[in-house]
Length: 635
Image 1 (tube, rainbow, N blue to C red):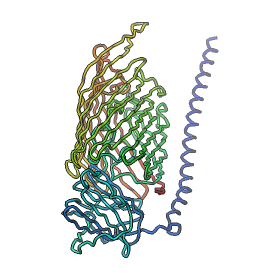
Image 2 (image 1 turned 135 degrees about the vertical axis):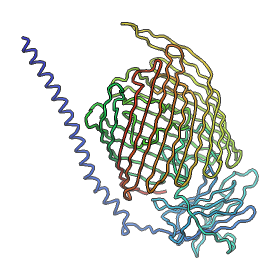
Image 3 (image 1 turned 90 degrees about the vertical axis):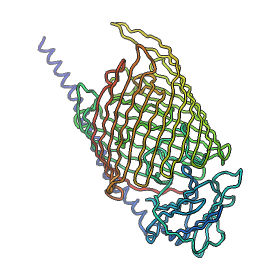
């Protein structure tokens, strides 16, 4: 009888092993078939795209910028751009700092213009810069010393464009096109022949970009203050995502993680293989601006099978200009991921200044399947030339319900926000603001925290390359938390009520040049507990730098964060983390780029924090990215 039971047990074990082996074989078979199909389809997609770019199939000829000239009087300046042929042109204005730009489609700068930066002794224009991006769009930027009105005209025989700038009369908008002064054909006044400066260097494009590449709606000119949820990225001076294009790509890479489960007592290191397609859309219309990015990717480990997963990232940013004064903006991001280290994060763990409406990004959960969702809708109204008001609502969620393995006492978090913003421009380079923020943070079974914040903020363009933004103010929080304590076979629920005041303060200092970006940031404020606890008072400080070195694009970063639970007494806990990163990337060919990186994370939890909150991880990674094509979209 005993032998028969042993045989049954062996058969069951053999069946379970065979089922597991069959599942692994099916998974690898799917991956192999997907990889083979991808590399077979790649040449088929490439052929028609390359054919569409060939000279025989394209009727678009490139126009050359032959030269740039300028002249000025007391309250009037004129810039002439000499062209080899007629060209389509888009004119716009940007702030922080003040500048007017012209985008010339299918145009390039003449090789005779060795230098592409013009320094002027002008009361309105400080300098002129120009450059060409990969999409054959040449941008000419007029950096302004003060607010202006401007008119852009076209002339023929020979082809040229004329930009006329003047000081606005009292009561007029600080920077605006002169009525009837879009792109027209006219005959402006003659420019003295002596005003013929030589050109010097400029960056290819000159816009500021958000994390998703969306553009800010026209608001009060000048640097913008804290509270609009705009992320300060490590973009070089004058760079931005390409506009009016659809980008298709494919990435493949491998990395070694020395602690894939985030368990310091039983460390397991393993190599993973990662690959997946990517899609990005940037559409810049007259009234609607849209940026969309989507990337699914497969992550498969060499030995361990538990963390194998298909992760997805999605980001959307849309701005609609309803009237000349009223605009709306909708933003949303969704991440369905496993673990800490995701593609493209090498060297970019530094907590940004951001908005208090965003989730806490200074607390890290080890190798847990999670869904992170954030959305925000803004309405902005330009009340007067120097003043704007804004209203926003937002919702952010952190969901661990579909995790790979048991997450212990991790808590789902739902954070809802609403706020009112006001900005006043003191000068073209200085802005002050106030904002009120209401947050409701729900977590656990039946716990929540209400937070009321009132901030004063200040932003200044200290120089053409240095910007400073600071904020500060009181925060009133009211906590209602239900804490569960196990006692033998029983569990007890203890309600905790607590109210109090905290001071929030923070700032960001950024120096941005053509080949170097350096950033310092620090902040202290009430935020969510990242799944470990309900609400924390968090402090974080970090530094990051990006620089072009010998053909490589290098990023260094480091940060420190300390989060203390808002609740005191029995449920009090504290978390400290240090992060560091380094990355190198380089273009190997026109559409192929290579990236290597190293990331380090050290986190410790004390008090009533979960045991798995303390861990160390190191990651070495390498990745290849291939871009099929930039498909130009109609304007």
